[in-house]
Image 1 (cartoon, rainbow over the protein chains, first blue to last red):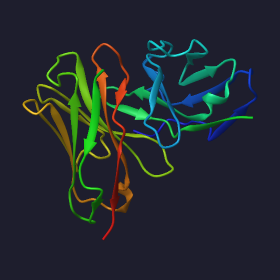
Image 2: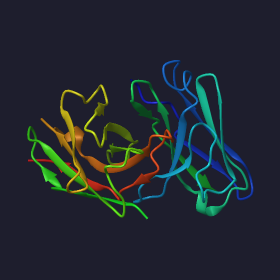
Image 3: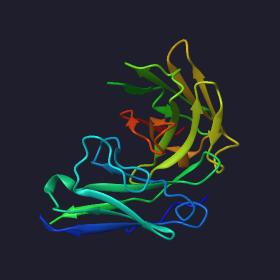
Length: 110
Length: 120
């Protein structure tokens, strides 16, 4: 069970859209549409922003959206705002009631 | 609003056992609708799922940690616990407890986290 692969960093200007990728294998991301995404501000606990690939929890802005193609899941944030600056982690169900996280992506709002 | 709170020693010696407890408030750990998990984050690094438990006691562990991990539940105290044996400096991390609903494959509520340092 290896960690999912995410870019170390992405950046964008306010109002723009960015996409963060999360690449796994046919044993995790590719087998299940069960990727979740978490936002983590410095010194804070992670917060769920997308679950089961593309669903948003109550209270999460519709500027956050998720998708999947093959072994790669993606998180898109549209209309970038300063408050979106944070680290983002993907997580996939990996079968047999186990989960695997990505290494995290630092989003900088320019 | 359900809350989770981690507690336990902030410093553990190498080769000893790390023990943490997560207290669930404003909700019951005995609900059949949820699993309860431990997740950790080494300083400056990513998240790692450690293991999960159902109120009935069924446990599920990260294969890479399975030989050293025990997760248990105490429904009378509305708590669940983590024991990680034979710790090394690599186990230094912020340890989070979290909830994952049976109908939602995700960790929807997290504790604030507690830093555990492994050092002599």
